Image (cartoon, rainbow, N blue to C red; front, side):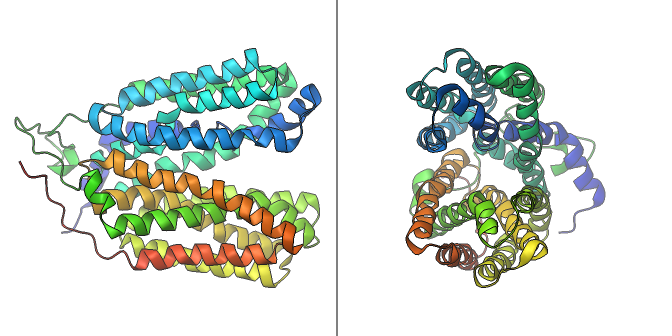
Length: 423
C-alpha cells in the first residue's frame, strides 16, 4: 500500500518530541557519556592526582560492562511490565547523581571502580532498550528513520562531550568536570523525558495510523502482536541476530579503539591519525540516519548486508595495503557507516521479527550480546597484536567478523506475519 507524504508527515509531527527526547537520552546515557566519550578528558588529570596507570583507569570499563549486562535484562522486563517513562526518568536522575558522587568521593582506585559500577547500575534504564520500545510503538511507516535519528544521539555525544569535558576540567578541575557531566542528564535529558516520554496507553493509535484528523483509543484494546521472550529464544532468527551483533560490535570496537596506534605504525603522524579517527564519529552519525531512512523503504537485512560487505573489504584493504592519510580516512568512513547500522538494525529487526508483545525483554537479550562482544573481542585483538608484532592478523579477523554479520543477515529470512497472543 502506498504511503502519502501527508501520512508520513503526520506521523513525524505527532511524535517529534519522542524522537528528540530519545536522541538526547541516548546522547547522555551510560553507554556514551558514562565512559566511552568522557573518560579521555579525565585520564591525565587522574594520573596526575593519584598516580594511576592508564590501564588502571580503563579497568573501570569492565565493571561498567558487567553492570550494563545485568541491568539490561531487568530494564527490558520492567519496560514490558510497567512502561518506559518511570524507568528512564529514575535512571537519568541516578546517572547524574553518580557523576556528583565521583566528584565528591573519588579518592582511590577501589572507589573509582565501585562508583562507576554503582553509577552504571543506577543508569541501566538510559540505554537504548526503553527508547527503542517507545519509538517502535509510535512509528510504523517511518520506524527505521525514527530509530536512526534517535540513535544518532550517540554520535552527537562523541562530537560534543570531549571538548565540553576538557573545558570544564580546565576551568574547575577534574572534580568540577564530573559535576559538569552530571548536569547533562539532569538538565537536558531528564526534562525532555518528563515532557515527551509518555507510555502509550494500551490500544492507542497515532493519528497517522487512522488519518490526519482523528485519534482513536479502543475501549477493549487488543494485546500487542508478537512473540514471547521464551518463543524468541527458541527462534533461530534471534540467535542469528545475537551472534552477528556480538561479533560485529566486538570487532568494530576493536578497530576504532586501535585506529590511532595502527595508523601511526603505518607511518602516519599522530595528528593525522587522530584526525582520521574523528572521521569515524561523523560516519556513525551519518550511518544511523541513512540506514534508518533506507530500512523504511527496503528490506532491512539487505540494507545491513550492503553496508557490512564493503566495510569488510575496506578493513581487508587496511590489512594488506598502507593506504596513506586519504585512503585511511575513506576506510574508516566506510567502516563507520557499518557501525552506524548495528544498533538501528538491532532495534528495527527486533520489532519486525518478534513484535511488541515482549519487545523490551527480547531487545534486552540482543543488547546483552551487543554489549558483551567488545568485552571479549577487544582484548583478543590486543593479544593478537602483542603476539604477532603487527595489526595485520587482527585486521583479518575484524574483516571476517564484519562479513559474518552480513552473511547472517542474509540468512534471516522474510518478515513473519505477527499474531497477537492466544486469549
